[in-house]
Image 1 (cartoon, one colour):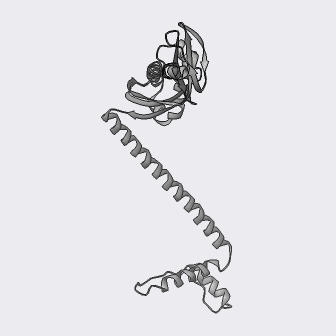
Image 2: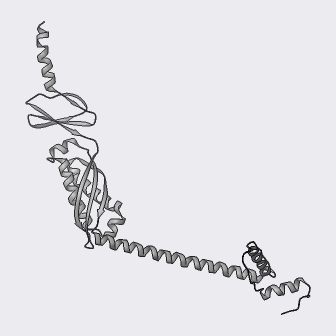
Image 3: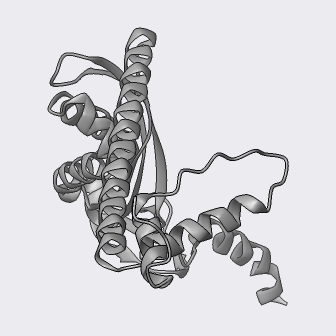
Length: 252
């Protein structure tokens, strides 16, 4: 009966002293103000007044880096935003070495992004986003290592340009497409001319070949009876007929 009388007190003490640490968390324990260890997942006893435990989430976090105004190396004003993925690799450092690691990583990513964009030209920023993102990731990862932070990835989400610059880039892209179209067309004409020259050489090298080609063309034209075709017989065809007829056709 005496034990039952103390049962409510025991339950209250357990509620006050027990702390649950989830699988994805680590508990940074302080005893009388001094760091006393890292606690893993499970139920842990924390003595009130004498001890304190701070839970640290070890999962990957996605931090949205807000729009940052920057000027590229070729003096063009741009607005860039990104998202950074990081996680706590050392819970002890994350609590002891920096006051608020979440805010610290966000601020570090913003300043680093402005600096990297300022060192790149606009064409590089638009065409090589992966390289720019990797440079930002490396810098932030090295700088935040002392805080127990591991940066997994940085992705540039959007690069905004002034309206006049967007129009200029659109005109430049249109001119580039026209230039490529002209080049492709000219290359096709060169290839076609080469094939025609080869065909002409083949026909001229074989007796009767031009005559057969002429007959084939006449056969193709005969399928459409709505047209009147005036066809000039080449001299080579007459000569071929002369040879086939055994001299019965008078030479022209």
